[in-house]
Length: 377
View 1 (cartoon, rainbow, N blue to C red):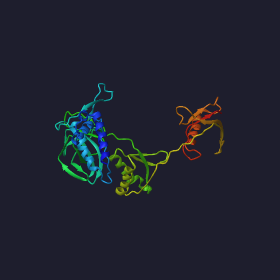
View 2 (view 1 turned 120 degrees about the vertical axis):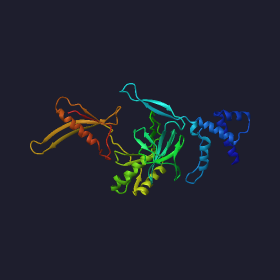
View 3 (view 1 turned 180 degrees about the horizontal axis):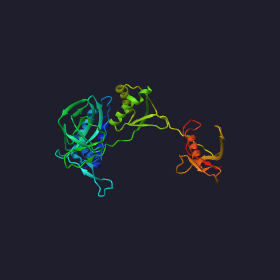
View 4 (view 1 turned 90 degrees about the horizontal axis):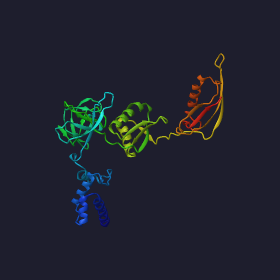
C-alpha cells in the first residue's frame, strides 16, 4: 500500500507542477515537497479554478467527513478572497425601454449597504426558517430590508446561526457570514438589500441549479388526500429545495417529482408520510406513447342522422397518409375539394372531428400524430 500511496502522491505533485509556479519551482529544483507546501499549492490552484480537489467518503458510514471539512478550510477561499458581483437595474434613457442591467462589484466592508441572498428555506417548529448569506454590509436583529424581487419591505425579527439541528441566537451577521431568520415570506434565490436612503437596489444571481437526473410518479393511496396535505407537502418542498421539481404529465395525468437522485426523492416521499401523514404509491412514470400510420389509406364516410324533420345526411371522401416535413409530429388537415360540393361552413366541423379522432388511437388509446388528412370530395 505504501508504494501505491507514494506513486499517487507523485502523480499529484506532477499535476500541480503543471499549473502552479510554486510547486513547479520546488519540483524542478529537486527539493522535498512537504505537506504544507503541497497544501499551499493545492489552495493556490483551487483559488484560480485550475484544480478541483476530489475527496472520497460515505456520509452513511460517517467516513471521510472530517477530511472534507478540513479541505473546505484549507483549500477553499475565504469571503474576502473573492469578488462578488451583483446586477443593478437602472432606468433606461427612454421611458419605453427595458431597465439597463449594470454589473456591480460588492464590497466586504461592514459599513456598506446590505446585500444578502436567501439560498434555502426550511419549515421548522417556529415557522419558515430562511437561510441567508450576507455578501455586503451587515444585518442586525430587528432590522428592515427590501426584497429586490418583490419590492416588499420585511423585517428580520430574529437571527440565528445553525450548527446541525442546534441554533444560536446572534445580534448581527456580517459580510461572509451565513445565518438564518424566521418569518420571511420569500423564495429561494431572493436578494435582500438595505432600506437606507440613497441605496440602489441590486440583485444577486441565484444559486446554480442543475437539471434533475431522475423522476418518479407519486400519488396518495387515498384520493381524497390529493388536494389536502399531499399538495401542501409538495408545494412546501418546492419552496425549500430548488433542485426538487414537480409537474403533472398531461398525457398520463400523473404527478411527477424530479430530483438529483433516487435517495433524494425517497427522503421527500418519507417526509410526506412522516410529517403529513400521507401514504404514497411511488413508481416509474408511464411512457407517453404515440400512434401513427405507415401507409396511405383511402376513406369514404357517410353521415346519416334522423332527429325529426328532414334529418341530416352527407358524405365525404379522401385519404390519410403519413405526414413528413418540419412539423412531421403534428397532424395536418388539407382541403382539396374543387368547387362547393361541400359547403365551406362545414370544413371547420370536419377538421374538428379529425383532430378529436386523433386524440385517441385504436391500438393503445394513445394520441395519434404525424397524419395528413386530405378531403377531396
